[in-house]
Length: 243
Image (cartoon, rainbow, N blue to C red; front, top):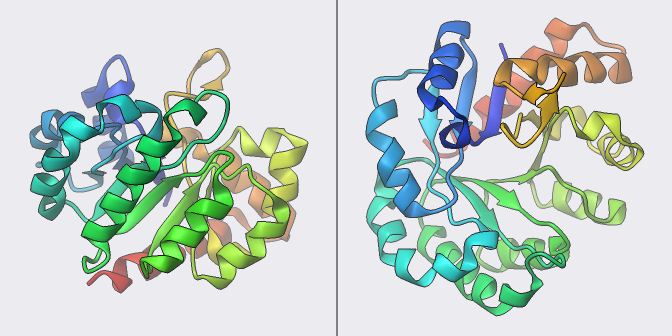
């Protein structure tokens, strides 16, 4: 079984086609959203799907829209077990809205700290701050999506009980491989981050996660079926924690 814990289904040219592919291929897929209003637009279209779920998001690079979306976030929170894409981005692209991002992130964490939710976290150049706030608000379940931060922080994230989701772009760079090497297989999940990654000159599909499975199989000297079983076990452990 393939599991895609981070895919922007709504940003494909034909979102329903992607959702149908996942449903027909048996790929468990969590669709991220960038704003609560985007969640509202997509939610009704995926209600009939068994393998595809939609997450309630507030992307840090959409910070200028956050204030008017806060009430929409709270209103829709009971509709899903998944919250994402949320987080902080202190890169050159996001730094000018740092204060808004921090205010929003703390707002979100304060509203979910008593809820049973699974978070998918954007942490670019704000990894230490993210970890600090997750611990401060006693958030038990979080996945660090496409982690690119300090390798020295990986151990602390693992000790806090959090997971990392790995995509095909990470296995093609030295820095990505170095990070993956530090993550125990019991703390790894898989993602496509589609459509933001390209495979053979086309947008990635969730089925392309098999490249990550193949890589982890070679890395850990395990059969591909064993890797898939382990990742399925990891994901089910998260699901069991919110029951």
